[in-house]
Image (cartoon, rainbow, N blue to C red; front, side, top):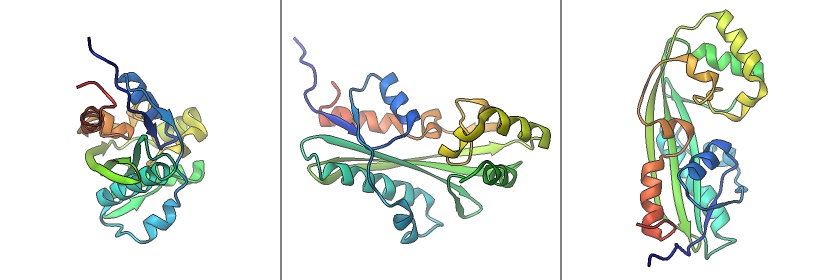
Length: 201
């Protein structure tokens, strides 16, 4: 008889997409949003190292929650967007989202999804995956319609798009893993959760 895993997992993220991915994959977890000053982390990090920043933010979130619940496994995650050697953050308004999308129009950018697993106040694993996003040269009329249809929900997404929604129409090609675009390098995360005993191997 195979017994169910007894280890607990906490997701240290408020992302609906990450919750949906884990739920869809059959991963048992609870959510506890990490109290991390992301701007402070970014201020001390090289903006040219977007992939490294995604990992650093994920580690900070995992540790922040793990310190308060040492017995649980804590999964932290974050995502960064690199365009021309710089970072794009979440837009603060729909007008700022418009400016971001105009800057990305007809160009290539990279999404980095970092994840980290903590236990007993220590990082036990971290990793990152990168996806190349090729934005098509969309019209101003499409951009107007897109912003009107998606609304302020875009402000929760780095890059001001959701690939699982109308944002799919912004692109001509995506090179890499779909789950990474949504905000989590799912395959290595699942492998680590099996190793940790959160999932059956």
